[in-house]
Length: 486
Image 1 (tube, rainbow, N blue to C red):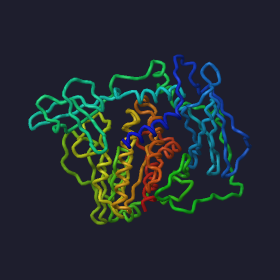
Image 2: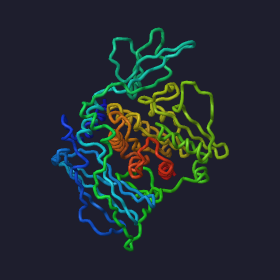
Image 3: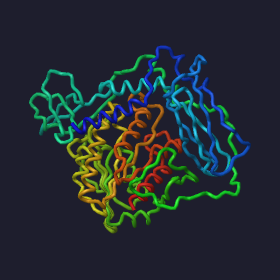
């Protein structure tokens, strides 16, 4: 009951921030071409540390000024010559205008970009559709015996008169169901997969708004870069090391020569083999979540090669989702990646026997000063009602609280989810869904002595619109994780 109340409280808090509109005419949606931008108090040249403020005024395709906010914008500055970039801070005035703030962290020629990711009408449709039901994803469970197997429909909700297998965590009230096959016990469920169902909660007009041709379009009209000089100023570097217990809003840092510089704290580089080996010497590193945190172990084993995979025979039905274990016997380094369980989205079948809800995985960790947990929740939750994500995140928070009571010197790092592709099915996987979860996760874990790695800010700044960030970004994500865990 207590958890249910907390879920509703947070859900309603987020719901109040989202503009609710309906659209039957595309011409009434926010138009990136018609919308205007103007730099407030422009200068011929700027100085290091100055701020550029841009006012955005939204207009629809008919040229009418919008009277409400809610557009999902993405803003960044960048200098290709020095591989420098940073996100901008966006303030929605709720009246069709926005204030975008950019801080100039480096000298040189700096470009400005403001994208309309989704008009407010599409945002409203995404929010409604996401929380309307579970029909967009179809799960299939594989039940096996010694000689044969059978597949059966599974999911969070099943509309059927047939007998149901109920897989319920009685403590945390997380649940998943399958139609029970004839002559198979419920315990015979061993593997699962999922596919996009031919279903949508969107109207035809809303679907058009969420076509790739209408995603991530430039609003900022002035393509000329601004000139930034040092003006005798020095970069002010923060004195304190990035540590547990603190997190900061976007913008939280910037790239310069492909190195991430947090604004509020110092990040140490963990990019070299020797430094990584010395840091991880005698430690256990548990990676929990999806494939974006699996990148850590793959980087260490396949690129840097200072740990070796422990290879063992796997069921033929398993593919990339199998548990990964890598070790370094000389330095006594132990690294493990395990996926979280439901909801896990994958076309290929994966084992559900070796994994558990993340809260239960955390409960199984002894902890201690030589134990680090890096976890991520997000990408696989996007196609489902937000309450599913909130419940799982609250359960993980409670598990972390239990861990820190019994082993207060354990380091727990939350790698927040990153931006991803723009050519995916937006109803199911839009970055707007990820942003909402990003906001919810910070609210849920606020006040706990855990570290936050702002993968969203990093990937927006770098403009890496791929599910798995490139090496340049990954190395900074890892460095931020280990700086806080050191």
